Image 1 (cartoon, helix red, strand yellow):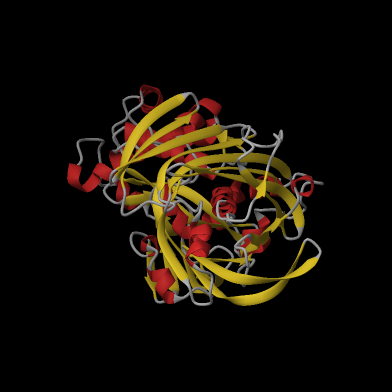
Image 2 (tube, helix red, strand yellow):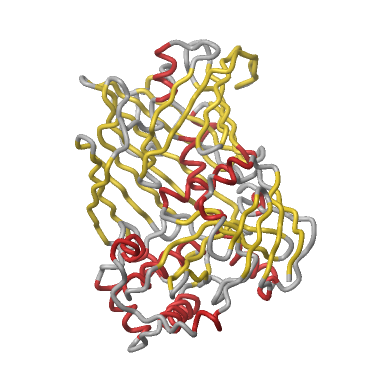
Length: 498
């Protein structure tokens, strides 16, 4: 029973691992490539004889979990990159297979022109195609049989992780050399700042030989990723937080999986505090100290202070909402002030609240109920009861969850938020931590507005959510990547709870 309970709570970190791995494997590109003259079954597509390729093994805490394959072709007016990542992950004792394939067209200066990104796991798949049109990006998102077109604004010249290391190499590798760019991340469908600096030279061992290499440090959302590039500019090895390593290997070694890694991607990120919380589901007040993360980083998380949470330097207090007080307001589903609540009532490419299938299901669940608290509870109870608790590696998509009726906290939260918005209830997504069985696990849950914002948890059937839910971030995928900056670094000291 304990194991099942832990699995339900802990699976919120899976999306983090997907983002982290995608960030890693998209960066392994140097100008030195092995020319290929044959087609390999593991490649995402057949390649021409002129195309060049690379292979890297992916390791987690020293154990093989998969491989990365990358090919590059020079075209008349730029470059075309193709890549595939394939992994077998250990998720709380269950094996999860995930493949991602990316193809991108870049100009001669490695600026992004178009891309195709696809993620396929054991139970779901999502494809995202993008095309740069001036200062806009046209996106086509296909998932669960649904195809949606969206256009977003670009902050600046769009790059991808593809080619950034190579661009730095072409400009000259020397200590102190740096490169800063806004990359377009397909998994979050947003532009993010990415910095690379050459720190110096050192000798490392790769493929049984000692070689001199430049040490590069890349910074993305507070995560430091270290890579080693040889004199010719080829990436030999890369390390990221939590024991994730990519190493240059021959093809036959790269694709040799071996057994599924013993290292669990969930337990690797649990934060164990100084004391155990008894019956966390009953906690109404929690006071704690956030440690080992700079105060400026904490202050950057806008979700930490406000509503039921108050942050004073590194001391955080959380008070569970009092529904008896809120229910006296009797806030009704009605026309909200558009300027204030438009963001929390609008559909997105992954929260399809305007789709008839979502709208009809919300009406079926709520019926004639007009009180927001009562309607919100009905939606939560339906999602909790009807969505199977199962670790899922995916880009959460409300329509796909409604069709598959399974997923982790990301899927529960995404579907709930879409249903609530469809019913006219302002709703948003929170990302943070929740306590269970000795530790804090990364987690996702929604909030609804009923005169004030109220946290709830459709994964755990809590209305409101207990006081051990620590919110760091609120928003969609483009905001959620901010959590990467504290994973593996944050520690927590519990000062008081009741």
